Length: 464
Image (cartoon, rainbow, N blue to C red; front, side):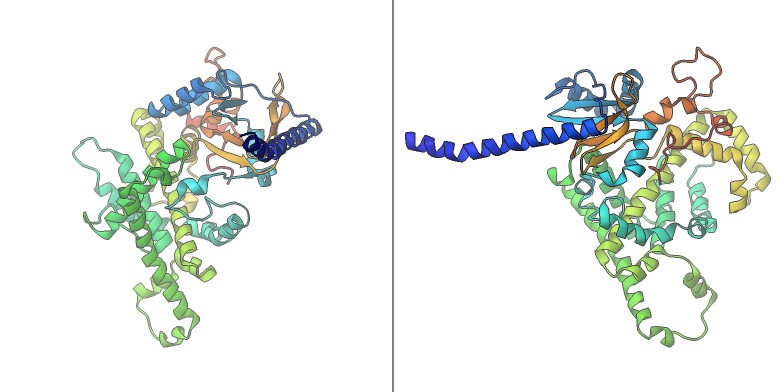
């Protein structure tokens, strides 16, 4: 027995010594870094601690009650623009300070990664621009960036057929209609036409068709991933047959377009162009001249998985942001007849004709409404980054909140545009001193944009 105890200690002692050495070395390294950059600790959320059960209980309850964003905003209002919260042996830094967000997304960009986003969005996305870091992100960016030049995104004519199809879905007898699902189908139709060269036409496709099934499968997979992302875990934790089938169908649907694009590229690389010489009808000429993201992508890479990933990445991001803003805008218009009247007056001179880009640029009130909706209802209301090395945020530490805040390697920083857009003094244009701490910043007021020119305190598209 004594021999077994001695043997066990001989194994445990080196492990214990190594653990103590590692912890001591990390503590000394962190202390030296803090001293070098004059870092001071931020305030902590009351209830924080090693386990932080009260904090965890509050977070879970707010997610269930769909009040997480309003709860977080209130905590920022009470504690300040930067603070920390500890629970389950982890400490997160929370911030709505524009200087800190600029550091995360610009000046200290290389110090942070997306963290576990790739694991969370798998298996729908196994790579691509919105789930990658470092060299992989740079490569994805080089593939995707040409699609978003002004010439490509300014193609307004491609929107008109889909808008008309949406209008046909709205009852003309005054019945109440839920616009949100229609907006999501509208943006899916437009996005797939731009990305794949062929719209799924979900607004008009027959029930049970491949196009309709793709829309339903993509919606379900995305919704499921969203709920799992809120919990901070990946889809692998809760196997779900319907989710797996939805992902498989979405992949197969896009893969068929990828196969066609690669085949067309292979033909172009050969001598197929010479065989296809001669006259072409007007429709074929139109197709040849139209920009299709997938066809351009096929010129830059022959990897079918990467092509599928980039398509789904852009579809996931581009579709939701537009549909979200449309939904928020029409919700506001349904409650504010004054805003509706002003918009109608600005649009009336068009006399029902589609606007061109120059006309849109000159619609000042429309632009104000768009900015106000993006401010109050940003498409990504909360986001985070994970430190890949010891670093710091420029503000938030010390009693006055003006000192740098130390961020340890592996620590998560959460930033919340939803709260920042409601709390930053830039957006308070109220004259009445009794209007409250944030004045009219939580109200829908498009006119405020006539007088303000925000920078990093306005983050509708994550600094992009």
